[in-house]
Length: 506
Image (cartoon, rainbow, N blue to C red; front, side):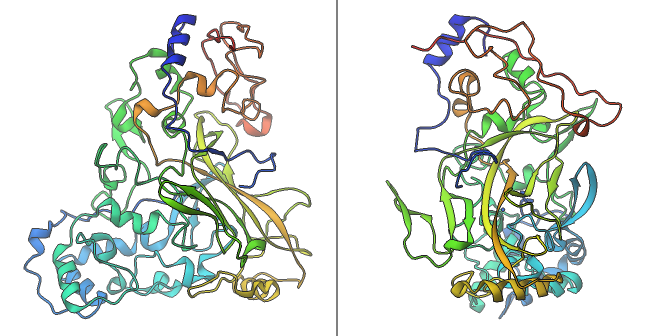
């Protein structure tokens, strides 16, 4: 950003902003009636020194199944099997900040994915578990022999989960075993939790770090395993004076050539400017209306690549080029928990960032809306039982049976009375970084065409102006958060922005 009107004019004329307009969809905010799954951790890295494919060419078969390949792996890597059984990828548990407190969170029993419990729906929700026989009992009590090594370490590109490979194919894949490529990780981390092959989340493939035209990096470079298959959610690096995490671990605290941009980075997350939209490569899930399950009239988008489904037979709503919403965030969440009551006439929040705290930054979030079942008497969400096999998730839409079976498996009473409510999930955006020339510019966030909801962020208006184009005083500070948002005895730092004149509309 500059500090003079002429600088602003030059920036606007040469503005690159976001990529070419593809009919971008705005995700919207909870109080808008917009139609619209921890970020989980990226799979996976080798343990101990990683063997190269050349070192595996001496492996001898024959193999008739994936467990036989695993047994061969464990002969040389027994300690790796023990490490995997203790890892997040096996346990599906991690330490997570919820309501400002660190606790163990289980993806097996969590309800942030449209209220669906993975433990109750192994046929759908455990398809990405790194075992050869995905089931809750395998996760709880399985041994190292149940690990599927090939899903992460096949470098031949031929392994397919659930497809019986020939002995020759298994031998070729075993000999190709090496450090995971992004394609291995995307097997599980690109689709949305077993909801279907066309339902995706973030833009991993187009991320400038992973793209062959960009950094050509591996997932492990930002999510190191520490030699124990314990993939870190964020890269950490000791800078000598303090621990740098996330983007700053590589890009430092002052990655920009302009002082004003570096000052912005103190209170604005890197992702805010460098992930201007999501759903760039493939349409992403923005909503799921269970009442539309089984409908046959599809909605399509005609484009250069052909027809793309925007409304699928399971009631999934998809979109491309979606603009994020922006919230204060310090990594802590509010989540819907087992038995939480819904409020009549209000949206039920499944996940959202916690209140502003010291250290919070403005960052982008993807939004997903749901229209789903709740118990009309007890007023909590119904966790359904999905069709475990191929085909529709809700065959025949027999809601009474779906609700009763699901709640019986979930071990919560079902009154026999159901209705539908609207849910909202806000998930952090961490992937889909664009080249610097496509990052947001000054006027994407400030001025008449701002994408920021300044009132929701705590400002009375755009902190650059008073709303009429007249400059405010040199420093603008938003209202202080309420008592509930500020820990006792701690003051939140003011948000200070240099006031620049705005070019008048022409």
